[in-house]
Length: 471
Image (cartoon, helix red, strand yellow):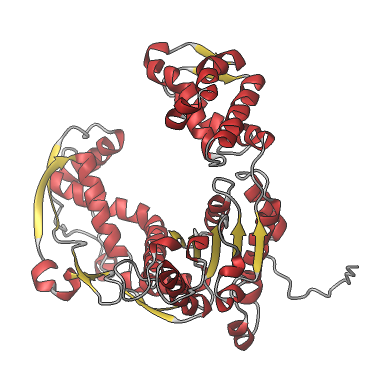
């Protein structure tokens, strides 16, 4: 029984991302799997709740990591990816089977934190650039006008008060002056009348050059900005390029953007966002499940990877190019089919760091039909939009949708079950002819019905040898 009292929630969260709201957003793109979507919605909300706690208690609250159990193609990755997009969080998907025990050749587990920090840096940088884009483009336009028409020197004649205040006031330009030409040129730029003209621009050379070295731990690449390390060599070099006006504006705007954003501030924010909002989707975790029985063989390596993962999931500090990153509050979402193993085959310490377990159900024919037409990014919507760019109107009849869903389900049963990914192969086969001839079908309407689908898929689906290669 839930009892509510007026005024009892004085410190309630006013953030619009309530669990119900998160679930609604996920429902727009993912069919079914309500239990898994509820689990990630609660985990995300707990992050917001944690931010409202006192500093001392906030550090003690561990993230509610999740293990998703289910076959491939049922939506595990999509749930995690959509969650990250919804919250603008740094998101990294990586397969646990790519990691190797320290001392073996391969990637070490620390690399995923460095990759996540890099993603966070690029995410924040893009946000900062978007904030100064208009200002940078205006500055680039002025620089371009300086190239097209030399700037006007300050002319005396301003009122004494204006001169005392350092104003750049100028009397109205006489007809035919270069100031009037400059404004006329500005209008031409906006109208696109200068787009075919070439101009020579000087841009910074060596920007973004990096030196890649290999660190002993896992042979991971670490980048160093040579421009910062040796400014006298790289920082002042410029090169000239002769380009058309639109490209010149883009090049100059990028230079101006770099002047307006602070890389050190972005690095600091990247570390903070990685620590507080980072999400790592650890796929194929079932492939590293298993414990060593005799001290030799592949089981040893699998257990070694688990032991290397453990401190990162528990909470440690990893050195990245942007600074030390604490992993204590990064949200880990693990996933696996667990056909040959089970979650209890993981190390007990690692199991304890994934308190939430959700099982995703295989997709049915009805689910396939809904996936084809209901989500905002539905496959049928994508194909009709693609063909519309060629002037071809494509309509899928309800019986065609049922037929496509049925073929996908049958082929998954006969061959390997790859879930909703089978819909892509089936649809590509059905739309092959229309896609190829679309430029010649401009202005026409194509109706895809059950007869058309059966004609293209019936024989292939019944011939298992052909299905293995084509569908």
